[in-house]
Length: 485
Image (cartoon, rainbow, N blue to C red; front, top):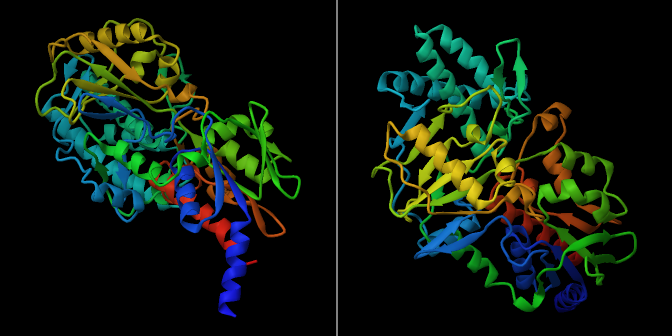
């Protein structure tokens, strides 16, 4: 009897086929799981490379990362690959190696110490606020300003010192833009003083919802995500991957799911796992599915936040920055005229590479990536050279940038941004949008259209860990259903 049940179950699984849309970490992990289960599948990738928002590129004796760079948490499969391959960096970012420059001048130790106390206490308060249901839907930026205004009233500062502190607060809020990939709202001007207020679209609930289980993230060596990506790819046969195969429509109106490609080819499957980025779904969901997605799922996709961070790697003949400097933060434009915003206002954070000694990394958030995507390399190099030279001339002897390397995620057709976050709109709607985006479309209990990707992981959205975990979960969902028949 047991052998008969096993045969029937195995026969059922042998007769099904699954489509996986997207070969990022969610799609690759789902494919790996189907390999283990001996379930037939085809992995469709619209671009000419594998990895999605993991994008290593060769440089010197290692790989720089256009996309994901750190590994969050330790109790997960991605960290196991890190340990297995000895990928942890032997050099850590020196938290004491920060240099802060405001209007071309170093912030002195007295003001920095005052600021450091404010920043530490505010981070603790924001964590508590995230767990407070009465205020967890509030805007992070406005909450920081609330604490900052109260802080200023307790300090006896000159006007120039207060200006420095206000710029430190801009840098502080920019850290959240970078960490959470939450861009600022459009700029508004208050009263006649033309005071710039740039509010994050990030709500406090993120601090309570997101959880990797540890307080830090793993910094990787020069092989990093290239080795991790190769590990996942090695477990998926090339014959089961269709590259440069853009899925333009998923028709689940019949007994089989019809996958239509941009070249006109079509294929039939029993189920499909959609791992497209949230940015791609936001733009294409109305034409991508037949029939249209359920209204609640579609609304959740519209509401949930999706940011647009980017890195630009600045190549120099030799490092002009001092040994031990881990970060230089810049606020305030030297020689600027007018009060409007510009790209320079988002060029705030620069970090030396931990292993490529002649590389300085510009971390760009807010409205910066959109502006950068409009510029040629030569135009961007000119702006960066002028920005660094004018703002740091009294601090360092800055040499000219030789070359830059970048990938514009905001204009990448299959990403259209960087990663997700819980937005103000999601908080105000009081809906469980991650769950709504993750829930499969069921027909007579059959999971006919499943959804995976970092934006569908309830605790570690934004991360490759969350993406891989979601792909595994949806592969198991499909296996569990057909195994139960």
